[in-house]
Amino acid sequence: SQQGEEDPQALSIQEGENATMNCSYKTSINNLQWYRQNSGRGLVHLILIRSNEREKHSGRLRVTLDTSKKSSSLLITASRAADTASYFCATDGNQGGSEKLVFGKGTKLTVNP
Amino acid sequence: EAQVTQNPRYLITVTGKKLTVTCSQNMNHEYMSWYRQDPGLGLRQIYYSMNVEVTDKGDVPEGYKVSRKEKRNFPLILESPSPNQTSLYFCASSSIGEKLFFGSGTQLSVL
Image (cartoon, each protein chain N blue to C red):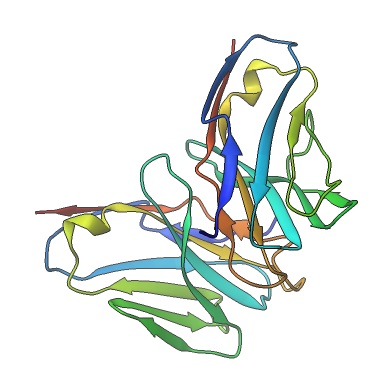
């Protein structure tokens, strides 16, 4: 089934650096969401960006969406050790709502103090 | 506090012994869903429900059942668990078209 794919699979940076994660998907979407997961815990919603939006900000997070390339990026600025987690993109496959929200495999981010 | 509550957090069982993982939300959400998470495979949707008495299959429904008799509850039932159902399970809920709220997860081991 249609699925977002995150890139890279793993990313290791130093505290204070910026972290960029990318997501590519296959079919048209209504919206794309980013979630964060601390090891083995439930996912926490970060940002939802709709197909008619190109960029969205929330604190140190910046998400872009390019529907022509079917891709999105998540930028975390001035990273902290507490940002260490896995990050997932999820797309709704243009079926409306979140009933078929499909998740990618995630990017594992490690921020070294 | 708005939350999705899953129980149990950890469960070890044997092949063929029926089990139920409970999920409850206190946000009056219409939509509820079950996912399983396996290394290298990400989250895969098992079943979802758009409202009371309305359920539908996700991408990996085989071997699972669900019911939605009340809006707040969405239990996941494994009638005859097998070792390939060993996984980390998550329940989630949302208003239609909005962000998902996840439970803390249930780590299931089937021996």
